[in-house]
Amino acid sequence: MDKSLTWREFVITRLIQACCYSAILFVLLIFFFLLREGLPALAEVELESLSNIRWYPIEEYFGILPLISGSLIITLGAALIAVPFGIGTAVYISEIAPRWMREILKPLVELLGGLPSVVLGFLGILIVSPYLRTLLDLPTGLTAFTGSLLLGGIAVPTVVSVAEDALDAVPRAYREGAWALGATRWQTIWRVTLPAARSGVLTAVMLGVGRAIGETMTVMMVTGNAPVLAVRLASLFSPVRTMTATIAAEMGEVANGSVHYHVLFFIGMVLFLISLGVNIAASSVVFRAKKRAERILS
Amino acid sequence: MKRVIVVILLFSFLSTSCGPADSTQADSSAQYIENKGSDTIVNLALAWAERYQSEHADIRISVTGGGSGTGIAALINGTVDIANASRSIKEEEIAEARTKGVNPVEHIIARDAIAVIVNPDNPVNELTLQQISDVYSGKITNWIELGGEDRPIVRLSRETNSGTHVYFLETVLRLGSKEDKTLFSMDTLLLPSSEGIIAEVRQNPNAIGYDGLGYVPQDLKMIAIAAEAGGAYLLPSIRSVNNTTYPIARDLYMYTDGEPVGAVKDYLDWILESEAQQIVAELGFVPVE
Image 1 (cartoon, helix red, strand yellow):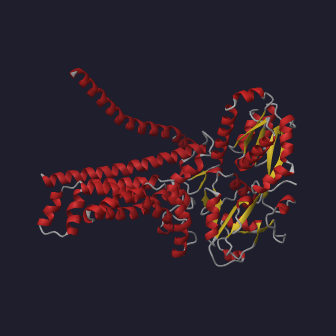
Image 2 (image 1 turned 30 degrees about the horizontal axis):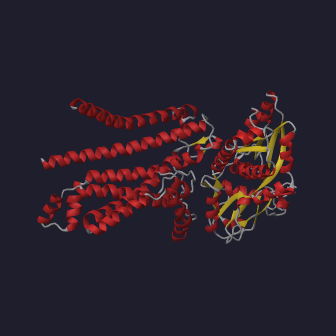
Image 3 (image 1 turned 90 degrees about the vertical axis):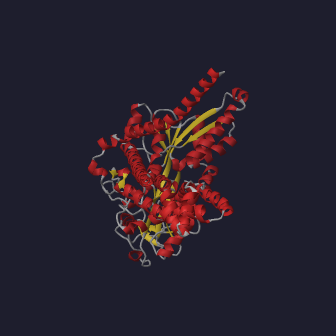
C-alpha cells in the first residue's frame, strides 16, 4: 500500500517533469529546424544583398531590411496603443470598478481576445482603413497605422488579463497602509499598487508585444504589404510589409529548397531572435526590479 | 482557397469511389483521367470535370492544382493525362519532355483577360499600355498626368506568387520585352487576394488595380486600353479578346502527351463544344470561338 503510493508519486512527478522539459525540447527543435533551413540563405545570398532595401524575391532581390522595419514600426505603434489602454483598463477593473461590474467587464474584455484575427482584418479593410483614409486625408488607408490600431486591439485583452491578475495579487494590506497614510486613491494606485505589481504588469506588456509582433493575418490584410523601408515617422502613415505577412504570403508557393525558401526561413529566424530578445530584456528588467524591491523590504 | 476546394473535391472523389466497392468492380470499364496544373484554371477544370462526369458515368476525372509548372512536370513524368497551364510550355520543358519520350501537344481551351480597374469616381477612362507601365514602375505618380484629378496614385497588385502578377509584369510593365528589367514601384501595394484589390478600389478614388476579367464586379470602372499611343482604346470583352485587339489577354492551355486518343480525346473535344465553353463564360473567362 505504502509502496504503491510512493511509486505513483514517482510516476506523477516524472510525468510533470517530462511536460516541462518537452516545452523546452520543442523550442530547441524548432530553433534547430529554423537554423537548418534558414542558415543556407547566408551562403546563397550575399550579406550585401540581404541588407538591400528592395524585396522582390521572384527577381532575386532579397533585401530584408524593409520587412524588419515594417514589423518593428507596426509593433511599436501597437505597443503605444495597447500598453496605456491595457494597463488603464486593468487598473480600472481591479482597483476602481465595483465587484459586480468587474465580474462582467473582465470576461467581456477576454472575449475580445478570442476574436479571430481574420475577422478583425475584415473590419480593418471594410471600415477602419476607408475611415482613416478620409479622416487623415491619406492616399490609402492600408497603412502601418491601421495595422497598429488593429494589433493594439488584439494585444489589449492579453495585457488587461495578465495585468489585472497581477494587480489583484497585490495584498490588500498595501492599499490599506497607503490609505492610512492619507494617500488618495490615485496616489495609492500610481505609487503603491502598480509598483508592487510591476513584474506582472511587465509580463503583461511583454506578452502583448509578443502577440503583436507575431500576428499575421490582420497585418497581411490591412497594411498594404508594400516592402518600403520604414524609417521616418511618416512611414507610420504609409503601407509597409511585415516579416510575418511575407512568410505567410510567399511560403505556400515557394519551391522547396530554393534560395527564396531559405531566405523565408532566415526571416523566421530573425523573427524568433527578436522575440527572444524582447523576452530576455523584459525578464532582466523584472529580475532587477525584484532585487530592488527585496532590498527595500529588508 | 482553391487548394481547399481541390482537397474537398478529392475527398469526395475518394468517398464516392470507395463507397460502393462492388459496383466499381462490376464497372471495370471505368476510365480515369488525371488532370493537374495551373491554379488559375483549377476551378474551371473542376467545373468541367463535374459536368462531364455527371453525363458520362464511366469516366472518372481527378483534378488537382499546384501551378502550371507542376502540371507540366507531371505530364513529362507521365503521371497525368492532361496538364493545365496558364502559360505556354517553355523550350526547356519541351526539350526535357523529348528526352523522356513525351511529346507535349498544346490545346487552347479558354482565354483570360486582365482588366485594369479604377474607382467609378475617377474621371480617367482610357490609358495606353505605356502609361500603365509608367504608373506601375513609378514614373507617373499623380492622376493629373493622365488627365485625371490632382490625386496621388495608389498602385495595387496581386502578391508575387500569383501567376497574374508575373503575367502583368511581363506583358504590361515590361511591354513584352525580355531584356526590359523594369520592376514594380517599391510602394506598390501587394494584396493577397482579388477581394482585397476590389475592396480597396471600391472605396479609394486614388487606387488603380488589375484583376482577371471574371473577378471584376459591376460597380468598378474598367479602363479602356490601347496597345500603343494613337491606337484604338478597347475595353476587355469576349469580342475584343477573341480578335486579339485587347492587349492584355492570354490563352489558357491543356497539354497532352501526343495527340489525344480515347477518353481523353472525347473529353478535350467536349471542352471545346458550346456546353463546356458556356461554363468558361460563367466563371468569368473568355470562351474560345
